[in-house]
Amino acid sequence: MLPTQSHVQAAAVSEAIEMSREKVAMTLGCDPFEVVFTSGGTEANNLAMLGFDVDQAGSGHPHSLVSAVETDAVVAVAIELQRRGWEIETVPCDEDGLIDADDIAGRIRPETKLVCVQLANPVLGTIQPIREVADCCHNHGVRLHCDATAAVGKIPMNVASLRVDTLAVSGHKMYGPKGCGALFVRRGLELSPVIFGEDREMGLRGGDENVPGIVGLGAAAHLTGRCVSEAEITLADLRQRLIDGLRSTLGDDVSVLAETTDGLPNTVAIEFPGDAKRIQKAARELVVATAQSNTPPDEITRVLRAAGRSDKQVGRVIRFSAGWTTSREQIDRAVSALADASECLSR
Image (tube, rainbow, N blue to C red):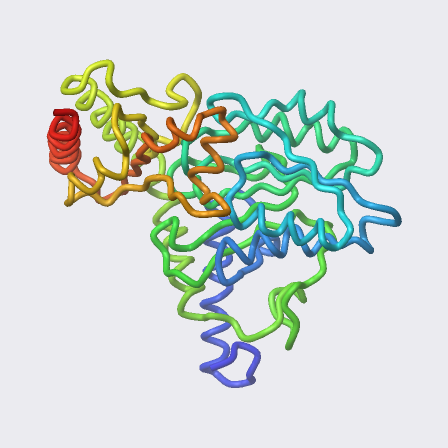
């Protein structure tokens, strides 16, 4: 069923899509016509970055600043832009994964056309000073793209306050269906499609709409808008319960990364005294994330290295992420399992 067809059922489909667009817009704090539905956060990042192509950027070699802790989706697109003639410069972070807006200001030059800084890092949980970065970019006439896939559903947000030009959202990161996402595109901003076919989504995306995915994303956005403030408090309590529990059992043997900076309420990366993979394996019931030893480095390894950790330290880090359905009892069981595994391996 296509929403463009001229019968009653098609009209109902079209109405459902537009209702979902309104719900996503309400969650992001923007107008519905500034929301473009995509197949997920990856496509949203691709559209925001590749849609601002070399021809639009002007002659010569356009310059782009990309933070060192971006997700793989943004890094991969930056590599593609480089292949197309862009000069890509990596912006370093401090030991907490934090980007300095003044550092970005000092790196902007006449050829700079695009800056990419995520809203929150999914490994360290660090929340970036996006408003300061946006003010800096706009003072120089530079476009700012923000990957917010790790932050939506965890913290309240408003794109008008953030002043970003484009912002990527992933459906399943906010308890919606996989295979659907959205891109906020500030009114008046010019983008070119990266997927071609029958025009959809205000000419920015070719092909038929994923109607079930869009409707599911709208429902998730509606729940997020209603519950995110309360969920933020609950998640922060669970995160602190995990930290306190591990410290009470393992003492100074555990180190919380990026603890002193503003961070996501549900995400924490902790360095243990022993090998993270062995601890994870010993604590069989836990579903957690550790760095991989593949080449090129996985996202966790890349982010931790960017934050100044040695390979030995990287191998000791476990990242934890609580969700809306996580209970205090689950946190306590995780603490017990990790403490037992760590003590067993240290014997």
